[in-house]
Structure formats: C-alpha cells, structure tokens
Amino acid sequence: MTEQPHILLVDDDSDIRELACDYLKEHGLSTTGAANAEQMWHAIHAREPDLIVLDVMMPGQDGISVCREMNGAIPIILLTAMAEEADRVLGLETGADDYVTKPFSPRELLARIRSVLRRERRSTLPGADRVNGLLRFDSWVVDRLRRQVTDPAGSTVVLTGAEFDLLWALASQPGVVLDRDTLLVTTRGRDAAPFDRAIDVLISRLRNKLGNRDLIKTVRGGGYQFTAAVEAD
Image (tube, rainbow, N blue to C red; front, side, top):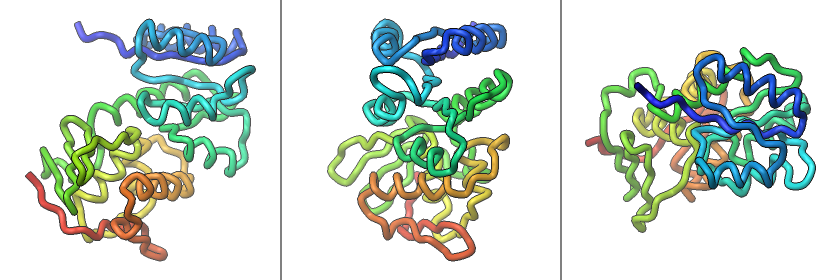
C-alpha cells in the first residue's frame, strides 16, 4: 500500500486548523496540526512532511519568515487573509509554491495540495516527455528524475517545485517562446487562477538562483524564452 502523503498544517486558529485537518484526513492525507512556528519545527523534526500549509499571520515567528528560512526545502502553501496582489507576490517571492486566500474552502485547499504534490513527483510540461533524463547547458545539469539542479561548480542548487518545473519547461524547449498561460499551467496545475505576476516572480527567483539573467529572455507581449544551447541525455 502506498504511504499517504503527510501534510503539516500550521495555523493559530484552532477552528480552522481542526476543520482543515479533518477534511484532509477524510480525503486520504495524513495530517498533523501545529498552532505556531515553534510547534511546526518540533513537528518537522519528529516527521518531515511532504508539504506544509502555513498561515502568514501568526504570533511569534510569522509565515513569511518561516518560508524564507525553509528556502524551498519543503513545499509550502501559504494561507493568507491578504487579498491584494502585492501580498500574494510577497508570498511567492519568499519561496512559497502556492497560496490560498482566507476565507477558503477545504475543497480548494485540497485541490491546491494535490496540485503541488503532483508537481513534486513529476514535471507537468506538455510535450516535455520527449526528454527523459538530463539537460545540460553552460556547465549546468538539470536532472529530471531526481529533480536536482547542479551548478558549474558541482554544487546542488535548491529549487522549489514550481521553480524546477519552470526551469524544465523553458530549458527542454530552448528557443521556443512560452507564454505566461502555458507556464502558469506548468507550475501551478490546470486549476490555477489567472495571475500573471506569479510567473514573473518565479522567473525572477529562477534568474537569481541561476546567477545569469541572460539565460531566460523576456519576449515582450509573448512570454519567456530559454536562450542557451541545451544538450539532452
């Protein structure tokens, strides 16, 4: 029997926490609740989760600082009561894989969790199946099966699930201009809401981690294009 994905849900509102945990358990997910960041770190040490659902506004260490400290090590969906685009951008800039705006339905949260978990297991780029193993460019190596990126010095570069899928989407089709809608589906699933800035933020994060803005070209009115010569194994 396949082990259930383990979700750590962190929210200081006990009603929200218990309701969401119960709903996720009913739909086949192992779930642990935590009321704050301190409890969250203890829970992670006891059993590392497959994904963290993390409230932004908590007493003590807040969700944004937790997300920065995590630095992509574990997939994160932020829970935020802030509906403004700038606040959503801030959440994505900290390394979150997705966000859900309060008030939310447990059904929506479940859909977002499943989408991120799918993304962690495999790349979702339409047409990318023609490349099954490694991509190499400018002494970088992208390993699809291990979902690992190695820089020219041989060090592993930590990417979030969305960042990895975005890199794979672009690098597996060098020279092809991919529009934002295509990339949004690639990084957030087909249930993604239209939010163009989400892709722009991911592109910015990816450029910073690659240390070369010229690898990914912005095509005005079109989208983004990977400019390096790529070898596929």
